[in-house]
Structures are given as structure tokens and as C-alpha cells.
Length: 148
Length: 163
Image (cartoon, rainbow over all chains, first blue to last red):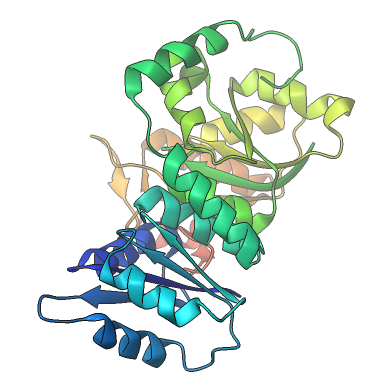
């Protein structure tokens, strides 16, 4: 199973993991890393090393800001490792769908693609989206025995 | 249609169903069988918005779900079926849907209901239907998430003095 590490500024990572447990209960191989005022990239690298003692394991980092310290530290950590990757812009839609796909047996490569897509697809403007959907829905008949 | 999992959940399709259970049971399709949601454009649209990319999801009336169940075109379709309450499970069975066990996952509390676990409340009508399902040999299991504890639902109703 691919280990998922959420790393973000402040307490965001812990809160995201805690919130995801509403949907997944207690999760194995999921870790959160906080980045607090006064800390630097070296502190984060230490934290990553403690969480991931076995660097042969597949690991997906989900970090908050592209170019932020959690991202920069993770970049150094994974740069020479093909079994690890990073996706930035972590949000709840991304995390929830990645964990779901992991349950379904996805590997690292598939989880990276899921993360990128779910993180973006989870952002919609209601009227723009709904107005389009309603036209599709209203054409669906209640009769017959075909799905839809 | 192969019903991989039948769940009672009054929120129908939401995160626990669309991201957790569907992957856990290995279904390719989620069907929410619910008469009022099938007629309610807003609710239907919101429910269909939940299911992630490759999972197909549908919101249909109970009757239409039973008809689709019998359509040979869907013979090999692995389905996670969600209904709002046990009465709708009985309606599906009465229309020929084969049901051996039901996962009682979540029924939101409303006035007049009895809370029987963190996530499940039952109305007097629900209790009647659960008793009937039990009589027909359907196994009823109380469980919220794949990795949380499961328990016998009828024993729970008994321990709460509801039957």
C-alpha cells in the first residue's frame, strides 16, 4: 500500500487527516506533518525521515503550497526516488479521492493522477455547473428498464 | 445486475459511500434507489455530483431500479445499491430483487425516531420493516464504515426495547 503523507503550513495537515477519518475511520499508512513558525526545511526533512524510515516504500506526498517549505523539503526528499512523488494544492476532495482509490488498489502512479484530477474537479461554481446538469437530467425518463 | 452491497443510508450517495464503500466492495456502479430523490432535480443532481470520476452513479425510483435489476443487459454489472430505509428494501424484494444481507449504515435522526447508534435512528415504520426483513431471512448488519465494528442489527433493536 502506498503511504500518504500530508504536509502543510500550520495545523492544516492534521485537520485534513482528522476530517478524512469521518469518511475512512482509522487509516493505516497515512501521516500528517505540521510546519510551524520558526521551523525550516531541515526540520521538515527530519520529520519526513522519521515518518518514512524505509525509503523503499512507495510514498505520495500531498502538500499545500507549490514552492512552500513543506513542498520544497519533500522535493529534496523524493528527487532521487522513483517510488515517491508529490502533488501540491492538497484539499479535501483530493485527499478523500486518493484514499478511496488506494482502497481500490491503485498504485503510486495512478494515485498521482487521481490527486491532480480530483483536486481540480472538486472546484466548481454552482450555477455554472448546475444549469448544465439540469438540462441533462430532465431528459432522463422514469420509464423503461435502462439505467439513467 | 449483481448487487455487491446493499446499504441503508438516508444520505444516499455521500463520501462514505462514494469514496470508501464503493472501493471496499469493488463495485463499478452506485445506484441510489429513492422515489423522492428521483423526482427532485436538485437533490438528484447533487447526489450525482458526489460520485468520483470512474464510478458510474444513478438516482432512480425503487420501481425503476427493480426493472433495471431484471434487464439482462446489466447481467454482469457490479452494483452498490443504496436506499433510504428498510421499507424500500422490502419493496425491492417484492419486485424480485434478491437480497441476502443489508448493511444498515446511516439513518439520520428526525422527530419521532429512536436513536440506536451514533449514525442510525429508526422510526416505528422502520422497525416494522426491519422485523419483516428479518422474518424473510435477510441478514441485517449494523456497520458505518468498512473498518469500523459491525454488529447484529436485530439484537440492537432488541436491546433498545424496540422489539
